[in-house]
Image 1 (cartoon, helix red, strand yellow):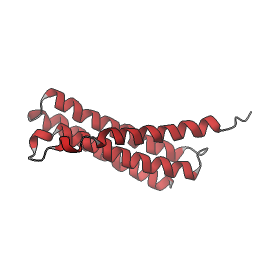
Image 2 (spheres, one colour):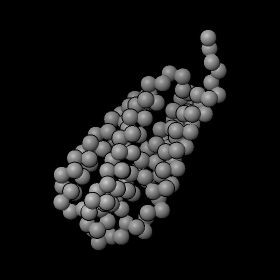
Image 3 (tube, helix red, strand yellow):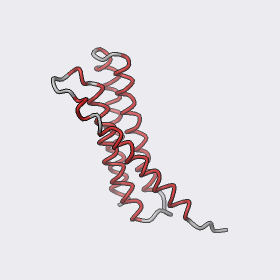
Image 4 (spheres, helix red, strand yellow):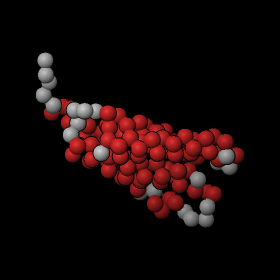
Amino acid sequence: MNKKLISTGALFGIIAIILGAFGAHALKKVLLPEQLITFETGVRYQMYHALFLILIALLTDLSEKAKKAIYYLVVFGVILFSLSIYLLATNNLTSFDFKAIGFVTPIGGLLLIVAWGILFLNFLKKKTTK
């Protein structure tokens, strides 16, 4: 599981850097400032969760079951949240109206929140040792 967490985190990080650079250079010419800010929000949250996956892999006190749950919640959360934000921010560049799928953004956000909640609850339940 740790290899999967780290490799997925690294892949999400690579994609976030590429999309961030793409947004800062290529999209800057074709998007309105508020659309660019929206796009950057997707990149930022993707990078946060890339690092979060790597952190989860490094935690030895977290059960494999918790790691697996967090992994899937983050993967699907990033896909639904960040990808939908990328599509919504660049909506005017295509003929498809991505506003029709905008309802998935908060679902993705909820999945990310639940992933963090699992981490929180696992450490809250953990008995402290002296």
